[in-house]
Image (tube, rainbow, N blue to C red; front, side):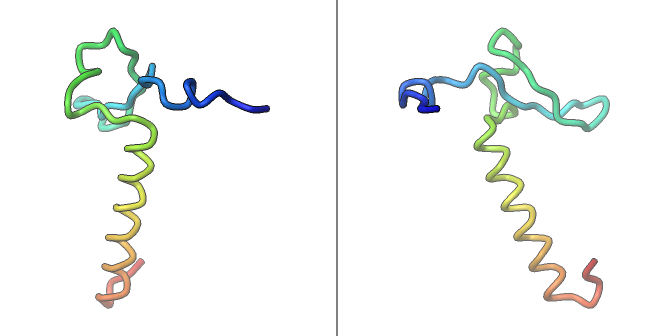
Amino acid sequence: MVVPVSVIYETPIKKFVKSNKTGEWCIIESDDMDFNTRFAMTYAEMKQEVRLMNTALERYKLNTKYGV
């Protein structure tokens, strides 16, 4: 299936925010008050954040005797 480029690069309809109550990441839609804040992340931003966390954990593991 071929997806038109215009569909891929449209403004995301959903984003993720971390709940203050549970600490879990929740999906929100464009009508949520946090949608356009710095706290809301797109899927691509979340994936990048995961990569950065994994890199930090790997560095910790390699540079300490406490690696998991």
